[in-house]
Amino acid sequence: MGNSNTPYDDAFRTLLTDCSRLIIPLVNLMFDTDYHMDETVTLFQNESFITEGDDSKRITDSNFSIGSNINKRYNIECQSNSDGSIIIRVFEYATQIAISTATTNGDTTVFELPRTGILYLRSTNNTKKHKILVKAPNGECLSYTIPVVKVKDYTMEQILSEGLWFLIPFYFFRYNLKELDASTDKIEAMKDFYTELWQRLEGYVDKGKITEFEKCSIKAMCDKVAEALALNFDNVQKGIGEIMRGQILEYEAKRIAREAAVKAEKKGANKANLLAIKNMISFGVPKDKILSKYSSELYEEALKLIEEDEKSLKEN
Image 1 (tube, one colour):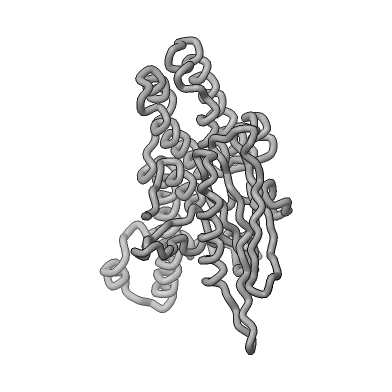
Image 2 (cartoon, rainbow, N blue to C red):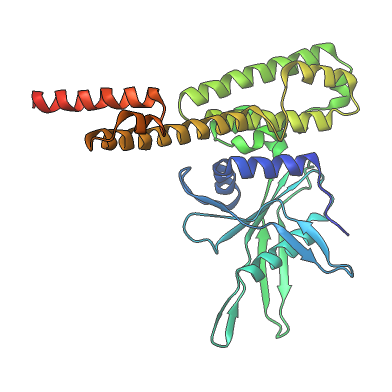
């Protein structure tokens, strides 16, 4: 059986890839850890070959470490339905990750299972953490629990106050779409809710809690999830179209990041070129030779810098 990707899996993986640090508060909540937001999140290969007669390839939703110990792995799976099948899959993924990080010392090989958790987008009161019991051939047992986080348990106020930014795109699962589609008032309330949310996220950007890139990424994934869920609800789709605009591959956040990278690269190149021109002028290289390689604007800027340096030396 091959791996079936949903728009929700894609949104989860895209947000994890583009804004890795946003997963840290969710990890702290799920595993009772206390990582800081400035810790390094390292992502690893998330494709595994599961033997079912045809060596099927499955893709885990995540395989990452936080901090300097890259062998201490985390695997959080995004599950849209509480049907019980996820437990077999997470154990399969866990063993594959353990194999990839196995270490051998003499006649002993250590397989370290990742800390695995499940993010349930839909759930019931019976959706709870699950215990895994592994029986070894010698009769010994390994027992551990798979913790869960259920989106429906968190209001937007809780999500924002606890910094659970990663959950925001999946908040749309809380809506009863059939009721929403049948009520103009509820659609207007939904639009007001998200309009206010975008404004609040702007405030968090201003306070330095999240970056502009992260804000735009969150919004783009909100678009993707909401559009997928509302596929069969025309009125809801129309309401979403009025407040949410975004594409997973070319959303505004990536444009901002690209432009920032180009500007930084250009700034670095200009700085190096100005230094080169200043040195050439100092060594008496003719102006025409300098202009054969560099622009007249950079040449004039270099002259100004030399004048400023000379003026500074005289003043001192």
